[in-house]
Length: 188
Image 1 (tube, one colour):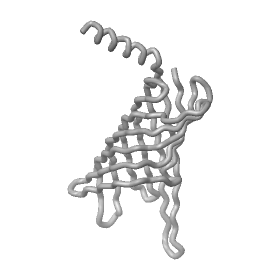
Image 2 (cartoon, one colour):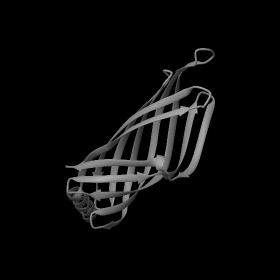
Image 3 (cartoon, rainbow, N blue to C red):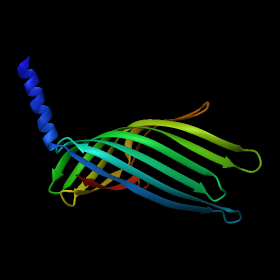
Image 4 (cartoon, rainbow, N blue to C red):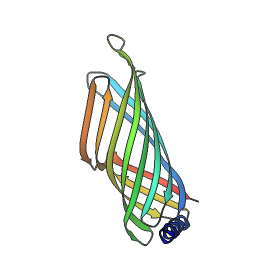
């Protein structure tokens, strides 16, 4: 029994010796304007901030927690505010020099508040609850021992949203330019 406990302590100590805490995240901004030749126009402005904190267990595995806050404002005054919590594990499956290729396995849960008023029929201040699970591939570049640039593209996953009696279930594989995400991490 003493040997098992001693072996477990040595294993935990070796993981802790290699462990490294990192902070990072991403910012996003998008302006989208639509117009109809003989009609009106509409525009949406989206701003998002997504801080992350992670813990590198070794050269292959990281554990992290990401938060995402997004605000969408529509030209006519409607707004949508969403907040998501996303814990994930990152596995770096191939490294060559300063470049590493990884896949994230994550779970997300969040809420979205939609406030709109069409001035005639509809007025609402509804909350949508969303959760999901999925894989997201990516690449990272270690610019130095402390700074790493990260990019990920799309993913494979399951997501479900619920608003009152309405439920939306989405299963899919998404790899397109709209799903491209960039970030920067700073290790301590």
